[in-house]
Image (cartoon, rainbow, N blue to C red; front, top):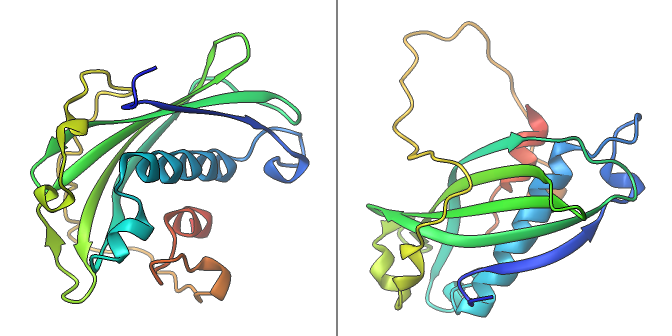
Amino acid sequence: MPRYFYEKNYEIRSYDCNYLGRVNPLSLFNFMQDLASIHAEKLGFSVQHLMEKKMTWVLSRIHLKIEKIAYWKDQLQGRTWPCRRQGRFAMRDFRLTDLRGETVALTSSSWMVLDLDKRVPLKLENLGDIDYFAQEERALQDDFSPLPVPESFEAEKSFRVRFSDLDINHHVNHVAYIDWG
């Protein structure tokens, strides 16, 4: 397997499931975050590596498509790869399959590199070797076109940020945002 791709197996544990024993989508997002973190480290642009240069990754958009329900004690194989660039955004895709090779979930995500001091997006060229973002394979065909701006808001909800919601960037982790929904 070329180094542009990374694979890791996961067992769905009881705490990854709802009361019916079905995997919780939050657990799928955590598996994918784990895959991306390990792979970025192997490629030389992990959060820890970037923080040494006063930079970090932030998730901009993510699209998850669940094809099949997985259950407690099922084994999943996760696969991830950086797949393309779109301006200042780096796309990373994921595929989770069961042991029979059947697709459980497909995900496309869009990430930015942020200057930690100025809190502004940086060009991807600041990472060094960006040839990784030239893969043709996509899990989902999503170019993350801009979302429309709502004309009005019908509902508003406040959230209290807990320490457990924060990640190593000192931001609310994207999985916590999803959990708040």
